Amino acid sequence: MAMGTIGVVVIGRNEGERLRRCLESLRGRAAQIVYVDSGSTDGSVEAARGLGADVVALDLGRPFTAARARNAGFERLRALEPAVDLVQFVDGDCEVAPDWLPRAASELAARAECAAVFGRRRERAPESSRFNRLCDMEWNTPVGEAEACGGDFLVRAAAFTAAGRFNEDMIAGEEPELCVRIRKLGWKLLRIDAEMTLHDAALHRFSQWWRRAERAGHAYAEGAAVHGAPPIRHNARDVRSLILWGAWLPALALGGAVAAYWSRWCSFLPAAIAALYALQFLRIYARRRRSGDSARDAALCARYTLLAKIPLFLGAWSYWRHRARGLKRPLIEYR
Image (cartoon, rainbow, N blue to C red; front, side, top):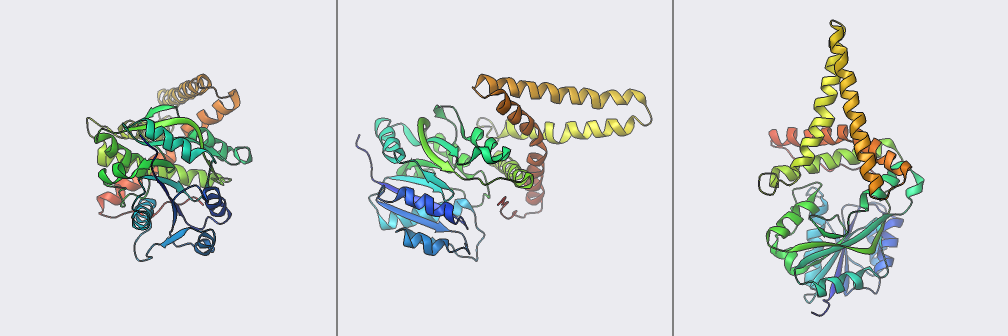
C-alpha cells in the first residue's frame, strides 16, 4: 500500500515561542498545515500566518475545547486539500521530530488494520522541575498495539471520519474516548518505537501539577460515564482507584484520628491505612524499576502517583457534581 498524502492540524492558545517551534518543525513536510486558535492574545494568529499556516480562529461565542479545535482544523484541512488521507494532529506546544511523518506514514502503509500510529513524546526540559520529569515519564508508553493515544498522532482520515471525530463536549480526555470508538469499528492503534514530538509542559509550580491532575480526574470520570459499562469498561478501573485512594482511605484515616480521641483502639486505623499507602508506594516503585527507571525516578513517580489521587478525585467529583446539576465545567487550564 502506498503512503498517503499528509495534512497537519495544530491547535493552540497563547503558546508563543512554543507555537513558532511547532510550525517551523512542520514546514515543507506536509501538503497543508492548518493552525486552529482558541482565542489567543499573544499574536499567535499573526505568527502562524507568517509561518505559512492556514489559520482558523474559533468563534468566541462558543466554549473552547481541544476537541472542537481539532474537528474545526480537520474540516478546514479537507476543504483545502481533499486528497489528504492521513492527518497528523499535534498540540501547539510540541515540536515534531524531523523523521516522524514519513516514518509514521510508512507504518500505516504497511499495516492496513491500523487506523492511527503514535510514537515517543518527550518533555523538552525534564530536568527543570520534578513535574516536567513526571510528564516525560508519563509519555514513555509501551511499544506495540495500544488502547489509546494522546494529542499527537497520525490517523487515517477515513477512520477518523467513520468514528465520528472528536466529542466536542469533552473538556479533557477526548483522545482516549475517540480511540474507544475507533477500536469498536475494528481498527487498531499502534505505538511505534520512534521519536515523535518534543513537548513543552512548562510545569514549574505545584499548583500547576495539581490542576493538571484535576483535569485528568475529570477526564477519567467523563470517559467512564460514556464508555465505562461492560464490556468496554473505559476508565472504570481508574475511577475506582481514585475513589479508593483519593477519597475513601483518606476519609477513614481522618475519621479514625478523630475517633481516637474517645477510643485508643481507633488509633490503629490511621496506622493501618498509612501501611496500605506504604505498600502501594513500594508496588509502584518496583513496577517502575522493572520498566527501567532509575531508583530516583521510580521513587518520584511512586510518591506523586499516590499524591495525585486527591486532585484526581476532586476533578472527578467536579464532573459528577456539574453533571448532576445539568452543567458543563469550563476548561481546566494549568498554564
